[in-house]
Length: 172
Length: 115
Image (cartoon, rainbow over all chains, first blue to last red; front, top):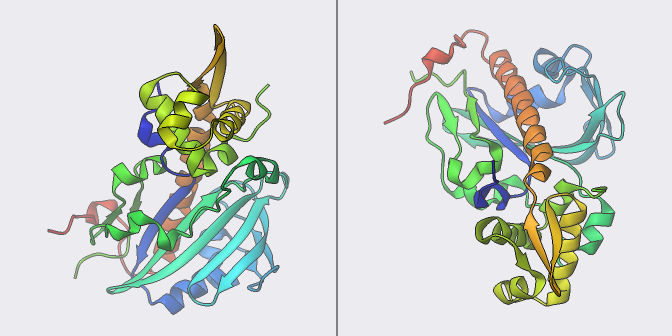
């Protein structure tokens, strides 16, 4: 199996989103408070919401308790953190969660990438930090609204046909 | 052998472009690629070395020139990582959506496209 040209046209990062039937304030609580995190990141989750704050997430879905550190906060809109499995601290990745108001709810978008090692970046003639997800050109093409949110696959081939089910956006 | 970081290698747009050309057009040299990309041969050679070090390209001497080509196996780690991390996030976001909508059914069959 040969890689296709599109395979390498975008940075190797995961980019998924879900549309929630909830106000941005409620969504922000769900990603920043112990009570809000518990149902999806596990009981005992905590994020100290300030730059450098500690992150502790049981993360039952990922199957390994995770630790982390808050990198950036844009109150109510964006939370960036670096995290790693508690038992494998070298295996760290960067996560950016952004909230965007949409009609009838909130879009929660998650981008996760591996950090670029200084050694690798130094060799580049034009080292670049991947653009924040909000400014990516693909965002111009609004995904269809409805029960299923979908990214334009041609533009997002690294994302392996992202298809996040918006379970609560049932049309009234 | 490939002690480099394939993720870091592909984080740079110029290197992704170089790799795209190698994937699309087949094996090439730093000189040819430099002409296509309008950057110096030295810069291209550096990028190629880094791509090779990361295991996503490989080089072979052909006569007096060094030819580079994309290395398929080097992409496997990236694909696997992306698939796993994406699947995890879809699982988490599903739970998140349910937690904020306790009264709504969370059945996938409720999905239907807008017209």
